[in-house]
Image (cartoon, rainbow, N blue to C red; front, side, top):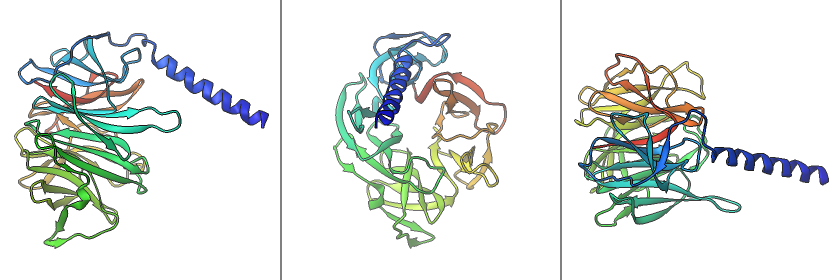
Length: 327
């Protein structure tokens, strides 16, 4: 028993030491200072994201000018695991650390990062999106397992109307059709909402070992499959293309995805020039460029790549995750 106690004590000490080191500023890392962060439209081109730079502002929402993505950061004091914003509304998926277990909640933020509503979450946050107008918010959590790469996981995706307060707790309540027939399956999962407007959205549905791009309707609570092998879709600003992660046969089962772009008119896709494994829901910087995260020395780094398949990936912002481009 004494040996077990000593081993347990060493493990706790090491975990505490790692946590303490993460609170120390990293050598050569970005400059970060406290200040006001706004989600207001028309406040100038900027990026708001979760800053993962080690130091006292780690995991806080921070902002940089869009023209200086690797420049000094202004940190807000609001901590999020996942984040997105549009139309003056933000959604922050947040952890509440407990003595034994952590709990999670979704915060709806106004343009000044004030919380207007919070919703308790059933699992670990993984995706978040807001409609272009700022009215609709969506998020996905893991409620079983911990990775999309395997098969032993379950997700729950929720949509909230921030205007009326109406909450749709799970997309599993929707009527899903494939080839004109209703899909009824106990293993049906949904994740990765991307909004076209306040009524229509795209997302991923999975059943029977296959993933599908779906188009959903919030008003009728219906959805229809469009094609297979599309995960974590992200709709282009003009509404004509979907960036997504595609499972490519022959790759490592633990790193199976490449970043692709789909033409919604033809349902044909093409790969981007990013050949590394992308386990993220990409964000459109503009009509021609994608941003996404890859593992980095301090958690995650943001990269960009042209959406048309040309060019090459480029590091945009180190130690960053979950960006939103605001203007």
